[in-house]
Length: 157
Length: 180
Image (cartoon, one colour):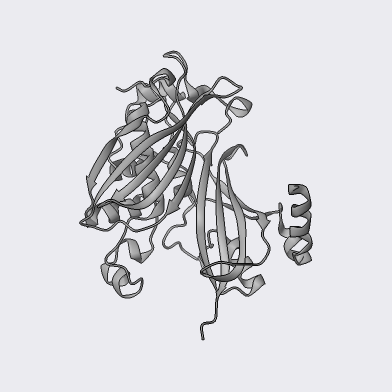
């Protein structure tokens, strides 16, 4: 099991990329797992003829789940998300190979002693950026530290 | 100075809109308690093997018991596709639609979306939401058309009224620029 600590994290560091072949099942499963019943995420005919898109496409809350998985694959279970900011630029369709990549933009320990990494994650299909995400994730400052134990004033996401 | 420009922003707003800023609106409870079945369906949909969600010993060690993935925040509030006796589905972000109507702006886009995570969400929690309009900008013309930007926060709280997360949306309501 990965157990990243803040010492392992440096500004400019790149996270290992994740590549995934998206199918119609990926899109539909993702939509239902996020309780998003809107037809453009499961009905090909609706997506093409009403939305004018090429096919059904990944919904935003499911993309958030992909970003979370990507970040915690890197940190291990003690990594705790504080904040995520999204900018949607394009859609992800069945047949696409999506690639998630990430770069550490900053590392800090806040005034409560909590360690943080600021990471820019991009979701790309064929070199086109579909979604950008800036994430702030808490990472243990030592092997004994656990960001999940923080509450109230000691948790400043 | 930002204080001065904030004041002029407010004075440019109709009184009823200025009064909406900072006020809690559309407080609503989710239709079902947080449950692990959905947690596993969600993790499975993105092949998330984080042991926090699959291994009770790890969950107990790290988080004092099972938690839901933070990014599932909005899942706990999405209404059932159908429910007996229901006549109308609550609109997520009703404040956004209210502002479009108030300013007579037929089109709108969301330019960005930030989620901040606070207390962990745990199986059995009952999540409720409320909407708070944070700001409305002056009239502006962008390449889309003429309209206004606004920022709406959706706050999520558990049954103990603890804040579990805030989603902040920047919307731009506009009217397309007439082309000749």
